[in-house]
Image (cartoon, rainbow, N blue to C red; front, top):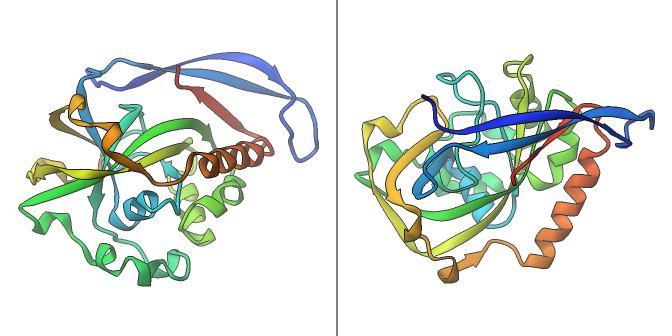
Length: 236
């Protein structure tokens, strides 16, 4: 049985702002955890994206799941970020990112005997949409160029895109993971076979000050409210 989050949805009338300012029908969905909450998970993402999140340059991820998956499923509300090799066109990243993260751009975790994971994240918001206008809604809080966002949206065009808003921290003491072949492939999640109580939030540095992150949260919600088709997933 696949462990993860299942979603229950109920119809709700909402006066979400749309382009024509009409009243729309949205779904209020609730994600329910069916995983072992004591196991530490890691979400695979390009090394350069992980570094950008750790440095507070990016606060959202756009996911549709890997080739080996039917779609993206949230398997944990808090997790480590696990680096993967950047295998896209460099021009898809905003100016300055290539230069700032030259080491991360070239890093291939498969060549390492062990990895030092330092970025811990918690999901603070989750939405699904098929609206291509979402690229404009997240452009200011993502290090990808519009072409990058457009490419992510158009892959598996008929499938929902999941937007994850993340609050992130940098660990003072890294979680050291021995590299295993099963950690690599076209899938999203890794079970690190470690306990979540290894993570001490008191010994972390937030990627962004609380006040700054709250402003970014408010701005994201304001932008998403303008989309015609977006469904918020409750994390409670």
